[in-house]
Image 1: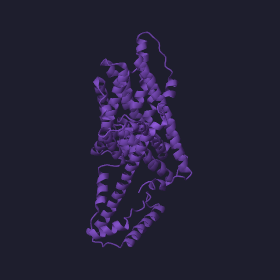
Image 2: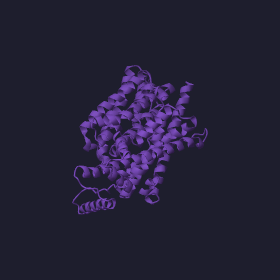
Image 3: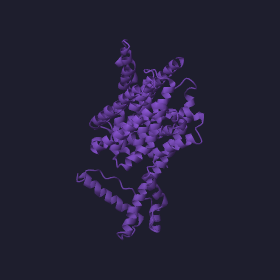
Image 4: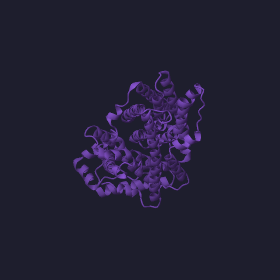
Length: 433
Length: 51
């Protein structure tokens, strides 16, 4: 992908393989705990019928036949349009597990363990992020794995594109209007605010330009896009990126728990992280951690937001180059079309293509499951392994100075205010389906 | 000054790498969609990857 001439593609392979292995292990964990959680719920139902209602245990064959019969009955009611939602296939216990429950009249430990892990949200997302971060900052990541681990992060993006198959244009427009509103108020707002405060506090233009773009719109991508136009020095750039990454890391690990504590629904949480977390990989991780509906909403806000990168760059050119030049009596020109062409993130076109294909009826329910749930998980797992392995405390320590204070306060303020606004707007506005 | 110039070049290079990255992202997503639509990958493919 981001191939470099030094060392060629070969230098990426070890790290990439490591991320694929970690991703697979985490998905294996995720599959197991989700299965055990379902087993837990089924066991609880069986035991409740025995203990509270006094119903005797059925032989396994009868238990299976009865569950399947009930499902068929529900299916007929659905086909008669008496119920709106298609019934899900029943989750049945394996014979060995069923017999074990009948004999012991207790829920097996592994089922309880699965239920607990889901309760604490320790899904593949948390395992990869926490695990990767712990590995990186304790035993360390040998240099041979580093290039590949960096390359693994954008593997999240094909997942974002594939998720497009889940939306219709009507969903996109409905949530998109609110997304646009949030982007205009909070994201462009914080870019402008950081720029103005930075100038009032007589901070260096290069540093504040990068910080304004980074805290406002899209973390590191925007900082990279803006750095050359505002003549940022390397030190400025790393200060700004350090601040953005530090805020994103704190947000990533705390927002899902804050969201639960505030009783945020999945769509509301998605809208919140889409607005408040500065980095695409981190916001996608936090939203996936919270739930699929949360991801669907966060993804729309993120798409609108990254689409605004060229506008932020144009603002920064105007604020840091054209305006000061005009004050000195010089006349600088800006080729807006050139900026849009150079800085527009191409991958979002793929997302829109997927939405259009879904609208045209190209995808069946099975395709949507393959693309928007299963393969999305594969791409995300590899990408999140890369994100976790790249959280190095030494990089976060690079955040510093007054710019750090301004950036961190602006990002925190944006998070608090956007939380209030999305809660007030409510679930219905942000619900994709 | 030379350091800044060098950094500018590096930033431009990083951004052009991001552009290349986006193209690879689109290719990877397109391959997955084609495999899904042609039935090479099904819902069973995913579960067959795990125990």
